[in-house]
Amino acid sequence: MIRIPKGCKDMLPSEAYLWHTVEDTARETAELYGFKEMRTPTFEHTELFARGVGDTSDIVTKEMYTFLDKGERSVTLRPEGTAGVARAFIEDGLQGGPMPFKAYYLISAFRYERPQAGRLREFHQFGAELYGSPEPSADAEVIAMADRFLKALGLSRIVLRLNSIGCKACRARYAEALRNFFRPHVDEMCEDCKVRFQKNPMRMLDCKEQSCKKFTAAAPVMLDYLCDDCRAHFEEVKHLLDGAGISYTVDPHIVRGLDYYSRTVFEFTSDALGAQSTVLGGGRYDTLLEQLGAKPSPAVGFAAGLERLIMVMNAEDVAVSERVADCYIAGMDEASRKKAFLLAEELRSAGLIVETDLVGRSLKAQLKYADKLNTRRVIIIGEDELASGEAEVKDMFLSKSERVKFDALAQYCKGGKF
Ligand code: HAM
Image (cartoon, rainbow, N blue to C red):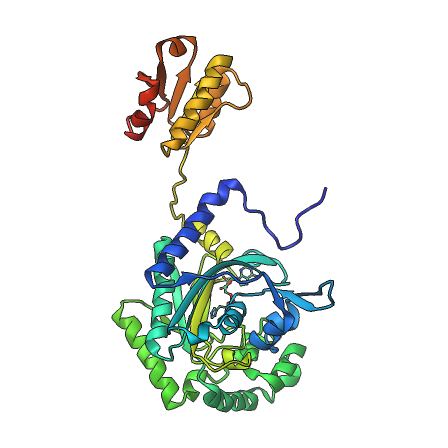
């Protein structure tokens, strides 16, 4: 048997209502804040991610699905959505339009990671990006939107962790402090960290190796190295969140796994997820556009992993109700089945979810199937009903029935009788 590739997951029809709940909530929340949907290609030129996501990130160095197409061009399945949105923002002339520019997306993304619970090779993201504002209010609006989205899903055990990683100037001073701190230990650290020590020592704080973790706990923290402007920016973001009643924890260990961030970074984490505890992450990235060769433009955004959100919803026992069929129409013989088919079409035109027999089952088997569908109302048609033009409508929960004229069935079912 041909099996699904490692690290991928099928979404089965029985789970669709959960996915739809998450996607509908994402769309509704984004639109409350004036974000409009944007779609970009599933693959891009490899260089976009190398330059955008950053060549010291694990994503670019280890995890990209990169291949040569038939024209010998190196292309990559997107590992995230931000770089593609940035490319489109520049290429489609959106940079010249009214600011701030706000876009959201629901995408699949691909990372060649070691699969485990909550970590897949193909996964899905809801993301949002805001361009054109350097103000702390833009950071706060994006964080408030993420918070509202998670609360609208009914999640209550999620913690917002907030940090500032400063600007280029303060990060240079911090990198020096980190090098001084790690220098006596670097020989005992993993091979990746030896490279990170030279290229981007902040990445060392994110290392998952036990041999490195024991050193990182006591490392200097970025917040002590912020310049006055970055400090004032961070204070204002916190002040706005306090005012909006959004609680958070300042966590100096949040550095994020992508290279494009500056100033505010944040993650929403859940204790229900085990090792992969981050359900949503984001931050400010004021230098990405410049890195891609465009006119500079400040930006801030986030992305949430849909599979992780669904895992947390299940763990927190969030009640999501699935819409079941409004009625099942059972036909007792050939002629009644034909009538059932036509009535089903009529009731669907009235907006009802209707099921009817398609496999030639006996009445008893049809009732059993209707029960499996969890349908409360069954409409039964036989010879007598065809002759009288009235169906028997049965309430399966109360074991009661009533006779209703064929042309009154839609009204009857919509009226919510039973
Ligand atoms: P990220 O932290 O790499 O950020 O990913 C965002 C979310 O995607 C994570 O919090 C997690 O829920 C989910 N995720 C990431 N990798 C996997 C995986 N292998 N399996 C399942 N879920 C995963 C970004 O992608 C940035 N582009 C976010 C952003 C937007 N920053 C600014 N704008």
